[in-house]
Amino acid sequence: MKLTVVFLSLILTACARAEGSILDTSKFESQSSFNQEFEQDQSLLPRVEPASLEPVFNYVAALNLALVGELSQLRASADPNCGCLKIADRLFSLFPHASLIGGSYELTRIWLEKDEINKKIFKVEIKRSDITKIDKQTAAKELWSASTITNDFIVEKRGQVWLLIDTL
Image 1 (spheres, rainbow, N blue to C red):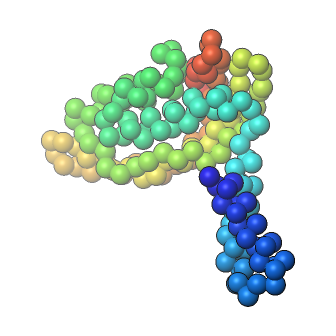
Image 2 (cartoon, rainbow, N blue to C red; image 1 turned 135 degrees about the horizontal axis):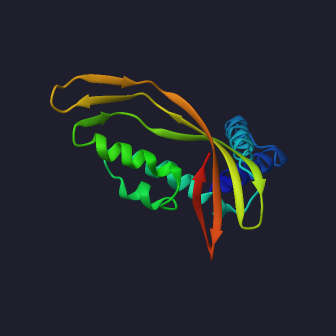
């Protein structure tokens, strides 16, 4: 879709110039410039089989759901023995006594550290925004400050599916 917008913008700009049109092409050029910057940002993703990145994306999406109490997606996002699932246990023990307000996880960067046919290690940077923990009994509030988390995510191909198996 985004590539279509870039392509269409470039064609319209080129046609307008070629025909001596009075059409103001600066709108298309600035849009094209924006899309080229976006495309360059996307090139920061490692050049790997796209399916091998899915476990990382799914885990981060599941972290966001876990903040509102939906833990099943988080537990399903990785191998049951993955250390990355310890957060699900901590949240499970927290929710009977407290609620979390706000907060989100955002995947900000992925680097390829090790590339094998059936196993990949990605260095992953995730930003977590501020989260307010509210005690259900006392209404006491505690702010968990925003943070940037960088971990190695190990994904492994099992059959035809890539699975997050551990984090370091």
